Structures are given as C-alpha cells and as structure tokens.
Length: 243
Image (tube, rainbow, N blue to C red; front, side):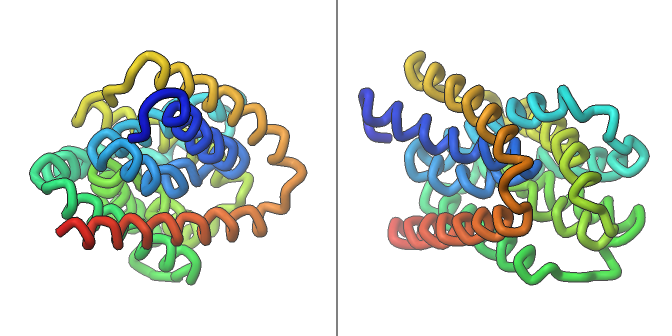
C-alpha cells in the first residue's frame, strides 16, 4: 500500500465509495472494494478489511430496518454460509499471493457477469436453493471477500423485491462477515489508517442514506456491477502477471 497521508486518503476514498453504495442498495461494498483493497493492502489484508467494512456498514443499515428481516428465509442461507466459511478461510490461507489475487479477480468477474445476466435457475429456488446460495456465498466471502453475488442471484430467483432484499441482505452481510472475521482474524492496519476507514464508513453511511431515495435503483445497480467488473478483471490480470 502507498504509505503516509496519500495512502490513508486513498484507502478512505475506496471505503467511502463502497460504504455509500452498500448503504444505498444493500449490496456493493465488497464488489467495489475487494479488488482494490487486495491490490492496495495485499490479498489477505484486503479481504479482511472488506469483511470488516461490510459487517459495519451492514450493521448501520440494519439498525433502522431490522423489523423487515425475514428470519425464516434467512436461516438456511446463514446456516449454509456458516458451514462453508471455514473452507474459504482454509483455501485462502494456503494460496500464495499471486494465485489468491487471480482467484479473487476471477470470482468477482464471473459473479458479476452472472448477476448482469440475471440468471434464472430452478436450483436456486426454495430451501435447496437457499442452501446452495449460502454455501457458495460463505466460501466466496471468506476466501475473496465477495459473498453478495450468490445472495443476489438467490433473491432474483426467489422473486424478492428491492424492499425485501435490502434489509435481508444487511442482516446476511453482518452475520456472514462476522463469521469470516472469526475464521480469519481482523485486518492489521496503522492507527491513522483505521481512523480513515472509520471516518469513511460513517460518511458513506450518511451519503448512501441520502442517495437512497434520489438515485434510480436500476441505474445505480448497473453502475456498481460495471465498476465491479472492471475491478475484478484488473485484479485477475494483476494476479496472473505475478505468476
């Protein structure tokens, strides 16, 4: 990572964008920040900070929407994710940096392309679909910091509306990212870097809340996915170049 004030400002800027998008749409922090944080901090620390930031911004959003969470629908998703998080942590701990960057980039790229297609699959419906999505999401969240696309695909196939998706995604994001942090530990940052991250999360929560009622949801989602696609492809290429 770039050192000094410039590095802290860059780190804060990345977290600010991700937090604003996540607060606005219920998803997007990991998709936007994971590839960039992996390049700035290294794959391991980047994923851990992504998990940490996702958990915090999800908790902020959940504080005002927890009554809209559907516990019955979330239980199989969260339970399945909890079972696959240790496997993702085990894989990530054993992959060298170049391979982990390449895997992260590939996972983000493929996941975004699948979500952009809005894939409809019978296997992602009902309890079985929730378990399959949870397993995939938990593994990807722990290994690469990006568990949202699998949840998004499940929500599309389950027929969830945006109003239903946002609070449930925040509940899921909080718990599964906590599982990932328990499995892999917390990020190691300097005190000034932590201050930059904390300030960015707080400001991003305010901006995202303000923008939530003003930015068309479909347009914002498309922009997020296209930016995530670019970040995933860049991370994949960086990892391959280091092999």
